[in-house]
Length: 288
Length: 191
Image (tube, rainbow over all chains, first blue to last red):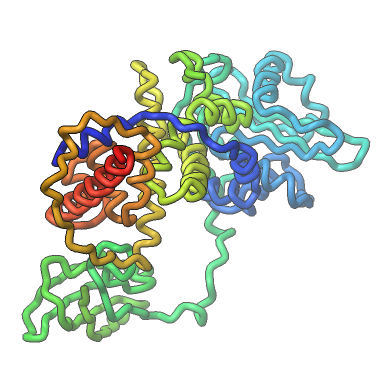
């Protein structure tokens, strides 16, 4: 029977003239929706980045741009942050931008036209600098280039005077062309900016009552919503005969009825809220 | 079209910075190879085209995760790219799996008086690909993974979330069906 495999194994690594679909791919790649989707895995929300830029520029006014600034700023977060809102210039090539940063590093003052908004610059080591090149257009006539660079060894939060943000380098990245050593940053949303639902919106205790442990990603675990809001909790799960099959303090939604027969189980969940111990119980149906 | 190591390395680095020209060049470099791969995993060339596009979009968005080591070789990138595209192809299979019930197969009767392996007919790539494309989807994925891309039974059972025995039986069915089809093609040619 392996002869069949032999006949077909010659298909490995063969080539076949592909249809010209680059245009479609390019369209999708440049689609701002896609870009923000991809970038969301690294950076949280557009609002966070906007706020960061605001703080970085020390501007009290908000940047009132929608399309370009959000799209370009999010593209950059993975490696470097480039905000280009200059409508007169042709779109700035990212690569050129970096090169320019290096070239003007020794004479930074050339690129800074408004030194008031430019604070706490550390440019002692070129290689480990992380540059944030922001360009904001206030009027049609007035263009401002603001380059903020700081040593990655310093705490970036101090430099940007954004204590609320956590900025952490993910890993070092060296380009073969050798002109910049680029540190990736992760910008997390400040706590206060998160819009938490109000008390009424969150039901205090919601638990699913069915689990299907077949690994398809749907109802694989016994999930109690908001379980992380009550770290002091304990759960006990019984089978129909009252035998304890699972017991845990600090439940983390990881009960998957592993190696248990299908059927009905009962749980007793206790948690601590404002000093009072509240106990909830119910049944779980395990299906395949 | 093939690049040497240094050129490829530069291209990858540019792609990590979202350089669209580099992305295009990389795409053109590997599109034919990857299209042949997608053809095997799909039932028609239009489906393969979709698969190719999705796969490349995924590859470009995940290219940051491709780590460049000191002993970089072209084969590293090629196998990474293949893996991304195959995973993407399987993903669409996984997504559609809910709506895909396995067909009942007709009893395969072995044809005793015709032996495929004694004839010296050489099948063309087109014929082989069209044979694979006519297989039911689950059999196609499993046969591709096992026979051509050389995944082990264990890996396949983990990827597709099946038992190893059902992988084996599906492989057997796929081989039987393919054998039948090849025999038909050869008969037609001989007549």
